Amino acid sequence: MNSDHKFYGAIPLKDAIRWSRNVVAVKTMNEIGIDTVIQYAHAMGIKEDLPPVLSLALGCATITPLEMASAVSVIPDMGIKFEPTTIKKIIDGDGNIVEDNTNPGGKEILSVDTAYTMADMLKRAIESGTGRNARIDRPAAGKTGTTSDFKDAWFVGFTPKYTTSVWIGRDDNKPMNHVYGGDYPAMTWARFMLYAHKGLPVENFHLPEGNFIQVKVCAISGLLADKNCPSTIHMFEPGSEPLTTCSMNHRKNISNYTETTTNSSPQTKSGNDSGKIDEPLIDGIVIPPDE
Image (tube, rainbow, N blue to C red; front, side):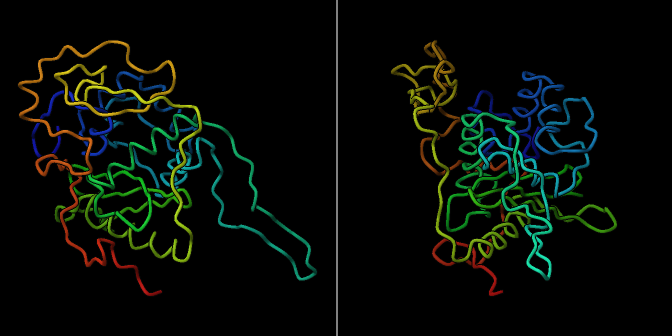
């Protein structure tokens, strides 16, 4: 259950991520399998021991910001894992290259299709979800995180160029005053990323050519839409698209569900990582630092 103590029933996974709905996270982990989730987490860069429990989906493990950034960077790198390094290149006084990490070798962890799909879903959290305070002047994706005792608030996000993780908490590990991941962490992330991208061309997340098909589906069930469904267009890897037509009675659901084909999200569905603090903007963009 989220901090708003509300349950929205069946919603698409992309909207569950957008609004940070905890029940969906736990159910997804249960469906995939705890061991599989841990296996992928370690392969993507998490080095800590992870407890084999469903609450892992909600963040019951201790992870460093470096590990979080390293793991999440696999997504914008289109499924390739690179080991993090603080040294790009070392040249000695005679011009000899002592160390060169400018072209590190990587290992494929996720398929290109899976990585793009994850990036596409995480974009929505920034565009119109709990990560709205992380919006910057270019395409970006990310996820908020808030512990129930308010001791930890996270925002981890990326552009096609850079991945950054932000953690906010107290030195004495005492609870903060209701600080959510969508508040100060998201705004801090936005300020840093605007400065980091200053002068760089705007890049988008590129759809792998020929790897996806577009299918009209029910916005609630995810099955093929019939004439009574609130519908949206989803992209699927060939062979993964739904084959069954939705038979849900939407009369009850429609009153509690807002169509998600636009970029506006229901104000009542902010989740427990809600971004609520206003920040000075220029044309809707957080003002970057001068230096």
